Image (cartoon, rainbow, N blue to C red; front, side):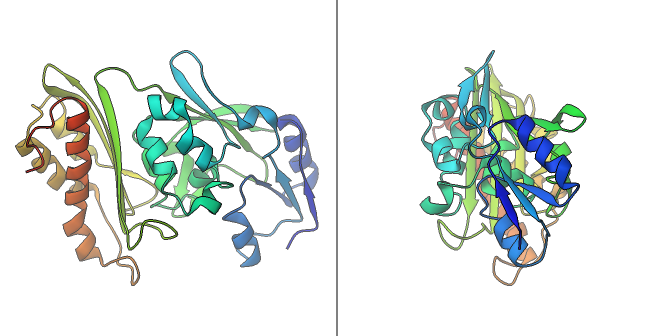
Length: 294
């Protein structure tokens, strides 16, 4: 499967090792996906470069109203972090729903994005938080938005034979803003969801100033419901408007049938329901709970 395994102490050491491997090495952090992919022949690697012991990549901090999560921080740490709970609570919730405890103790949020699965719970929560990814490679540093991370179904634009994600930077949630994550699955853990969604919004004077809605698996990566977002912006926060927006998400959704996780028809009927749940939760957090969900 591979012939060598190293633990660089710095990002620079890791990049140098990848360069010397000349395409035959790959980055690993938690390894919950790539080890299975290597065993199944999806990828080939002679060298695995494990970044999990690089100190600066194991930290969570705040810089200039931005939550900064190191690429080697595991999902359990994210779900339990007081900083994440305060400034990105929907992400803390989603991070605690990925896999089971044993998986969360090693899997990383960066890995959840790089695997590029359309229903990855951590990536779904991130999708409406406007994250910025810091990526280091042989040509220096580059930055990428969420939409710039996906090259296709289960394909990432980050080349793990050359590049290392170092940090995920997320604007801190401010007063007047809220976010939520919801999933529908056959069971709580150890199964990809049939559907999941995240919503973030800001209110001003009883209206949605802006709304972001992401959903999956209904396309490549987390898919933004652009038509629903545009329609709901500057609308009153009411049950009727939430229900209308929840139906509009179908215009940007194109789910496939899956023999295990549900047919296309089932997903199209159910998607507006979980989106409405997330929107209602956000409205409640913004002080407009009442009977919106009736």
